[in-house]
Image (cartoon, rainbow, N blue to C red):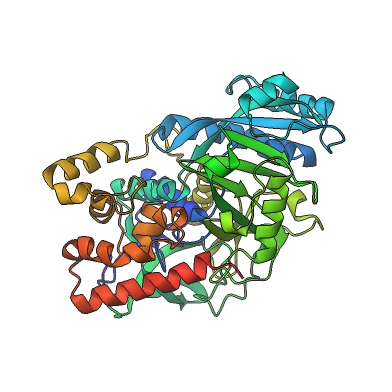
Length: 496
């Protein structure tokens, strides 16, 4: 805990998404004195509402973004190596249909380029005939199917990847404060020298001083800096839906071309569910309240039904729907899918370093570039950290949860029948993963809110009872936390 002690740091990072946590880890591993301030929970914004993919960006080939593809493949392989408990290989089938926008020749050339850019770091792709494609994915529509392809990428738990990165930063000496709002910058001689922060649970404001400040708030308005009229980042909305997997019938992941607008989208395995997504539309919605609309859900259902014709999915099949906003460094293209997912780093007149754009897969490389800029601002020689070699923590999570269950049988009882989450997952989240609220636990340390039609509301009181001794909650506090969670569920999962 930083606390109202007037501590001073080399670098203060505002924003606890994947970018901010990556910067904190890299900077701390370089030996800098690091503090990170997050208004809500780690990964509480876009970083927990992705497609949960660590992917080489095959769809970026179509727009000529070769550098981004090469970087994405490299970073995917690094994350597979340093976080095998969080990032796992995933097989994708890409079915090809007569008259589709992407045909066999175009896909074959694209996958060949993908393989070459991987430089031998990726499993080889295979072209499939129609029978082989149906053998891999029997639920696909057979009419008009001409063949397909098999290629490999990776999947992850986006929120836990963010948390693990923050924990790694903390292991290297960084101080991480969540549920703490940055109210304003501290200025001296027209330069930012710190911030005033206000913790949510104590309400007592205090100053935190730093030689360099990094703004990693992404799509959020820079409300902490009234003196810095930084233009809000452009963003596109990405919506997803979760469907019982038995209704879809997918064995692994599928790459699909929406017949509605020709966009590349995915159908992804997620335990007993399938995730279908994503949309990609310009939005002016607030990141505070962004959620999937009925139009978004209809688009995803219609797109999926074109491939899984026996399923005939309807709104009633949707277990949950959610959306995030991608912060983009540029909005030059009229087609949002053609906008580069690369990032931009800008140092303003007050000395604040702001980063916009980027993607989950390349967060580690992006963080290294940002910390290079930090060291330049500090007048230091660049001293790269071995963030590509040191494993992320949490590999023993399952063992520790099993230990908690063995020590207390009450913690082994499932929170919801049919799902793997127990009281031990909650206790572990509080003790080892910096969880402090029901939303932290049910939306981000577990995916219970995504995997139940009530989004965990019926379990919330029981969850509060389980973690109250860990967090020192009174009966009044428990009731308040349950109500706060209900509001978060409405804000994130409502379809309107």
